[in-house]
Image (cartoon, rainbow, N blue to C red; front, side, top):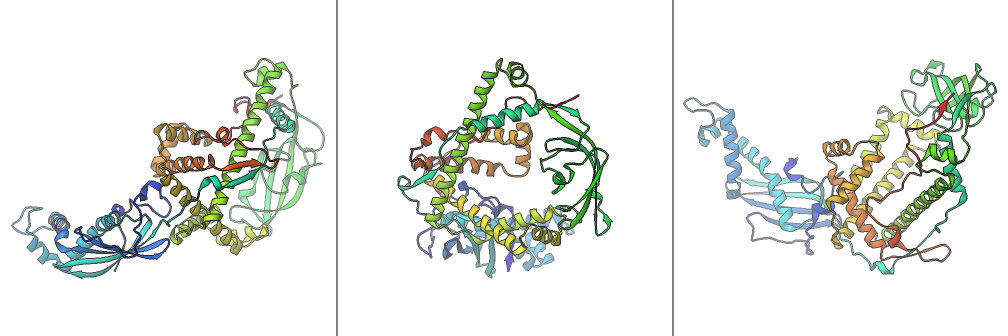
Length: 498
């Protein structure tokens, strides 16, 4: 009979949360390995590179502690005349509920720990939940069951010094610095009302309404919305529609809705321009440098922007190196992905997509069609992405194990602080949410995998498209390193209206 393991048996990973440290022991080389020295006897059959069947035999004498716990629980639940609660003899309790009920309880309670014991004895690197089936129960003699479960495939890692990749050269263009300067000036610009038609870059206040087949769409109705023309942030087609429209005028256009009850359907949208403002930028001088940064002169500010742009360019090049090395390893090694783990990842991503559309699969199909795609293509892309993600994690975990990669508390703390900043949270709040979601192990695994990949990159030959050698030691530092925002002032400051 199929049995669902309790949480006690889940310490070896789950389809959506599995870590390198969960499976340190090596899978036996033989396909039918026997451990006769242990009270619980087990053998392992290799069903595929990523799945095994564990056969387990448990002598009945090994179940005595489980019987004792079962009788103790029954004694607390059942009142027998002449006995205080919890003191009724096992024989009388068994007579009341039947031997079969006791045996069923004992077996269900015993399976998780005996399964875990067999996994430990056989040194199997399991991933996810097992499918357990009881094959024999002989009362007073033995219990036998099988557990089919996904495992980490054996990965024969190459000599990393034989790998070479080519990436784009590190170029610091003046245009990139100019863009950052322009962005900073825009943040400290002032908005002034103008009496002319809307132009790209203007800031407008608008009212929106929409209908689908003549019916009003409430979630697409709003008044007094602020919008930067050309940003493309509100609704597709809006920017093109309002350019040339003056304050007080309205314009109709069609757009495909992406959320809500009418997601994926074409709507007739009416936009009314309430007011138009243009942004005036401050002069790029010493006074601006003092306003927008900690520097006294514009030259100092410009030098700092160049440094920040260079830092971002290095981070981008480092990311390209990591991607190229990973792609090379994945193409070379052909790592099989456990089907159950891939399916769990696919199901999670599909659920997220449908959840965002109020669990409406028809809305998803209509949205995909409006984007020139289909549900079949979507499912295919999701599966391919999930397979690549799983194979990548398996590869990095194998590298981490081979390299004996360790993660210190300071490295874990650094990653948590960095992630908290990305989400705009205090570190204490972020780590509390991570712990509540039981995702601290995932953060640990990410840091470990990052360090493992960095150790590989250091031994790979990297050149740019100009033929110049790339110094990977300079690019790869702490595992928590990530692209820095090119900003010269606190993001809480911004445009002033006048």
